[in-house]
Amino acid sequence: MKHYNGKRKPPRPLSAALFFGFALLFWFLVWQFAAARVQLALLLPAPGQVLRRLAELLQEAAFWQVVLASLRRIFFGYALAVVLGSLLAVLTAFLPSVRQVIAFPMNIIKASPVASFVILALIWIASDTLPLFICFLMVLPMVWSNVETGIREADENLLEMAWVYRFSLPALWRTVYLPAIKPFFTTACLVGFGFAWKSGVAAEVLSLPRLGIGTKLYQAKIYLETADLFAWTIVVISISISFEFLLSVCLQKKRRKPAE
Image 1 (tube, rainbow, N blue to C red):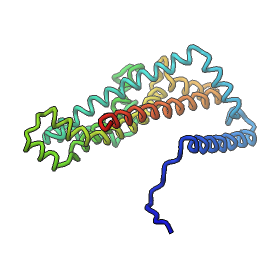
Image 2 (cartoon, one colour):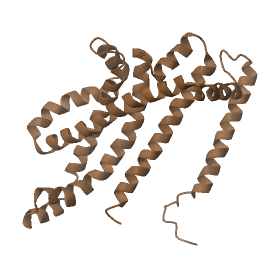
Image 3 (spheres, rainbow, N blue to C red):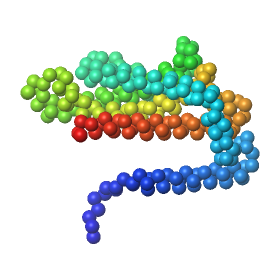
Image 4 (cartoon, one colour):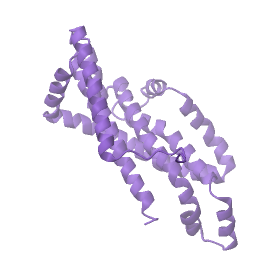
């Protein structure tokens, strides 16, 4: 009997695509069956009806203006959180006094629901800027805690060797700290983008900017346009999956470059 080492080989791309296709088909049929049983498009439109409405939306110039407006806000808030969170992590990792000041608001932000911040921020921030601020606020603690953990996880033996050989500060960061931070930073970026996208759209639903996917979701709900509601939901899910995949590919390539 062959020894089983507990490791499973990842599925090949073709096999993974086939499994995904079968799963998608299965849930598509479940949706079709449920819609046929309900027989009321106001409550549950059929998949074909939703896909037709989605195809109509894709042909409208206004649709792309709305999507680009949401992407612009969310990406800017996300990028700002990644940069500032990384800088704060460096400060708090090496300055305990600063960490005591920063950790308290970060823990409050992590423990509070998105809706609370949206409602409070509406008092001070314009509706078009609010989703950007919420994305920034939700991702900031995640990046800060992950990058700080990566700095603290740096190999002590390598740090001692760097001290003995008197590495310069840039060399110390390049050879010791950055390799330790990379896996934590990658995780923060991947998880953070998904969280930024969901929180940004939720903020749009509550703040109702002039152009935004969240605004379209809210309007579809108010006017009982259920097919539109499902179509915009598919857009939200598709964008999230697509950009998370692209981000993971980019980050993995960057991680391989030094080894190559």
